[in-house]
Image 1 (cartoon, chains in turn cyan, blue):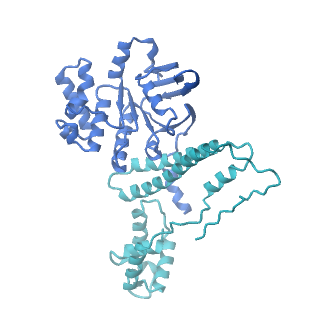
Image 2 (image 1 turned 180 degrees about the vertical axis):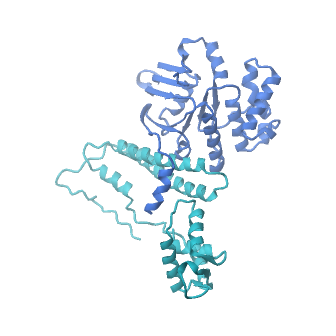
Length: 193
Length: 241
């Protein structure tokens, strides 16, 4: 989430004071993203420095200033909305690493490890579903936030399910390395970015 | 207090000798009124068998199945059939509506089979359809309804009358995610109104609507979720980002 771009989006509706920007930011992110007023003004200062917003007048108390988006700000916002987020993080997800490491630890039941994580993820999903169930029909922002987390977490459960089946299909249980074999895989997985 | 459903050390074997398959092994499970329980597990884990045994559509090889405190093995077949009609509602993946009957006729069929007079049954059927927001489709045939509407009718049929136990097998099967969510909201609402619900699913998002998720693997209950804390704790997590 980019706070500067969220503020630009709010200003694209018309000029606003800092305090109002803070309130609108929180309500439109489903109240799940608290933002203190100091952060709002620091961000606005940076946006002003970069020519993306301007104020009615350059002097006076910061709370007296009304901010408006510039045409450069409009262009920046339009470009950011169309720029895909980083969908290709390095394959170093902590859960994946834990499972890979568990395969190397003697006496570890990998299916039990997978189940521990599956249960924990689903417990978090139950909480997000409670949020969604409790949200009124008009609180679209909150439902969208909950949906995003639910789909992300569901992806983790599906990976755990697939890992379970894949590891069950192995011809024999994976052998723990002997003491003088380093823990590193024989062919280190380096995925170039 | 008596549980709406209680399985005690329930096992189910199919075949014998070399072809013997343990579909369920010593399963214990209690479901209370007002509680929605999801049963999750991979294909072949025994989830559907668990549901058919809980609904007395199939008999356990050993163990006890109690519905409202009544041990199904101790009652006659005709009493079992009556319990199936009166106490237990089923929702299936493919809805299982009879194509030659209208929505309301599908809903009232179990009541009429049970000897309830047509007029009384229709009134109860319309009330159930109304609760599921499809009362205006009461006189339509299944092929005139959308997938979401058909599943609502199927849920209405499962809750009509005074059923205490609702059993659903992959109830959102072919529905898209929003219709699937709507079905889970309805099942949750039905259980929170005092019915005990068991939903079998392999989808985590659907299971997350349940108060408790039970994990089944190779016929064994291997784990279950603990009651989640309130949603407030989640929202506070936003501070850490």
